[in-house]
Image 1 (cartoon, rainbow, N blue to C red):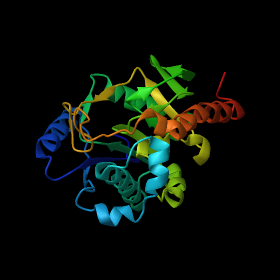
Image 2 (cartoon, rainbow, N blue to C red):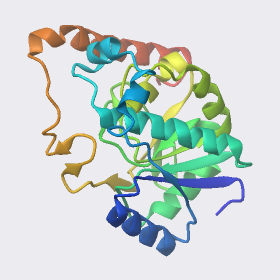
Image 3 (cartoon, rainbow, N blue to C red):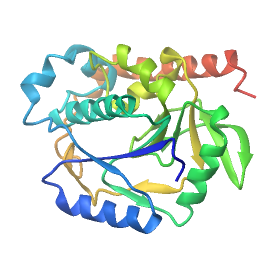
Length: 249
């Protein structure tokens, strides 16, 4: 791996099976990762709540904030801080439910060879709607997105972007992947490398949202109208930012 690349794996100590599975995959790929303890949102809920605007979160996300979402948010911020404390120029950040595809190393090398195209680039997603190609290489497309692009399980981020995001990341008003999807506010190039070379798989049991999302309690749709308005507006904001930065065509 390039000397300027650091790799961080986020994992809760109690999730030992996930940690073992991830380390086994990484060993086979020849990737050495630094293990970083995830923030336990449930155990530190009172502390984390001091850095959250829960009213804005409920409006923006259309549902109440779960402790696990606070933990994920704080975990990624903590990794960025560890990254900036290192001498690395680029960070590969992994959650502990990633399944790497056979071409992952090829995709990673392709992304690193084209650093001028992106500030943050993802290797999988939960949703990735309305892609706009920014170019191709080695059979991969570097895509920007007019629609929502969510999921933080596996991504590269530059040192410059991490330093840019950190001063503006609190208070939490969204889930982390939704905050990162506001590239139009933070002014950076968010890219997905498709076809994706990994995918997240939590086995249907999430420490954040529970088994089959049973911890998620959404209000009646009429109470989520501000959320729907915001979602529609964000399409326009992403479109306009891409247009202004000559990434739309």
